[in-house]
Amino acid sequence: METFPGDDVREHLLVVDVDENACEPETKIRVRELSKVSEKGVPILGKINVDIPKGVIMGIIGPSGSGKSTMLRALNRLWEPPSATVFLDGVDICDLDVLALRRKVGMLFQLPVLFEGTVADNIQYGPQLRGKKLSETEVYKLLTLADLDSSFYNKTGGELSVGQAQRVALARTLANEPEVLLLDEPTSALDPISTQNIEDVMVKLKKNRGMTIVMVSHSIKQIQRIADVVCLLVDGEIVEVLKPDHLSQAKHPMAQRFLQLGS
Ligand SMILES: Nc1ncnc2c1ncn2[C@@H]1O[C@H](COP(=O)(O)OP(=O)(O)OP(=O)(O)O)[C@@H](O)[C@H]1O
Image (cartoon, rainbow, N blue to C red; front, side):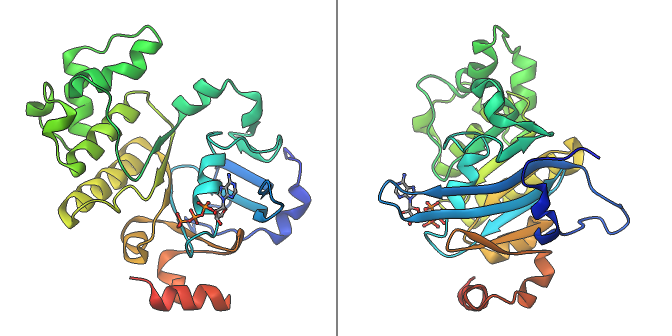
């Protein structure tokens, strides 16, 4: 069996078998002893260990300032993690070309920022950087995948609602054919219908494409709707990894308080 630095912590790992019939689900992202200390010496992340199985939606929840975004950003090197702490398909992500990594591990933020030009220009941008020109049909397919109809093709950012812009940002990310999607509170600025649209797309991407999705959310209800597994972060440490319907069994006192107050 392949071993990784920090694998001696494996027995302490909080691991959930997402599919109870599977012996050991394939790990897409492996995090080992990931720590971060601020420039002033304040601990932000403390020796995080987690295995993210392939083809699941993992929700990350926790109180404000607990390190959720920092952890997420380490997974595609928006924050550069120390070497040998984050592995994609068993390869240290610090050894990968950073742009190639970010194509494989795409990210969507809380507020979508579209480039100038049309929706189609935005969607074609990533592949174009690699010398690939997406055809009109390919752009339409990506629009459909992000739950947008063909009328959006020639619209500009200024003509879109935040929810529509978020779906364009999603289509733009999907144009790079990522294997993993990182989502940092992707629906916190959206109305309930736009939220549901995005959630539906996530579930379809997992089901139809086997996509691995890691989503930071402040909404416990959202996590319960779409996540297969939940990672609970408190003060820079993972205190629980649970199935969403087992959240009420979280033992950590801060976790319990957070869950009681959460919506
Ligand atoms: N570059 C940095 N330098 C100093 N402190 C930082 C830096 N990045 C993050 N922090 C601090 O680290 C802690 C964790 O931040 P992070 O944004 O990861 O938390 P979070 O759980 O995502 O919070 P929120 O839910 O409010 O978005 C916070 O106290 C934040 O102020």
